[in-house]
Image 1: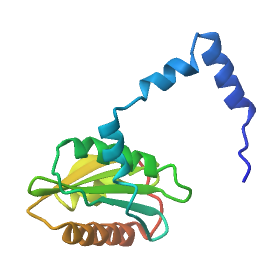
Image 2: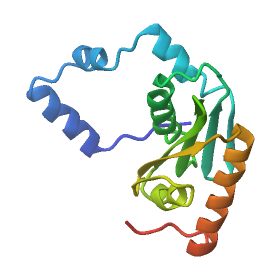
Image 3: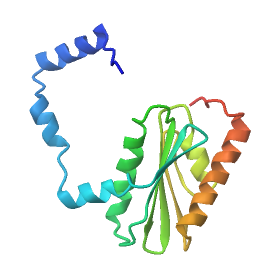
Length: 160
């Protein structure tokens, strides 16, 4: 697989360098502690692709730590980098609730999908919380909501 880089990419890199951007300093901005790294990695263990464009990641860790909410958001963001994925959802349990974090590449309105589940947000980033739900029940609700969204949009990309 080849990666094609155009003149705009090199132009942007040249501009950033001329303004003093330092790749080593940028890398330091993304450093995380080991516990957060492990928490985020828990979302990578169980990922499925639904309808060829929705990635759904489940973290079955039962510690219920509120830090899982942030890890879920990061996992949903990271799943958008997978080829063919247009929307992603990261699902985890926090206390007595199941949390779902949704992200979109801009073609699918995750806000509409998660509003049906009592959540909210914006077109490309949304979340929902389902009280006293089992992970399996929450996943079924999520898939049902995706199905309804697909029916309403006829499987076509939505406009922002």
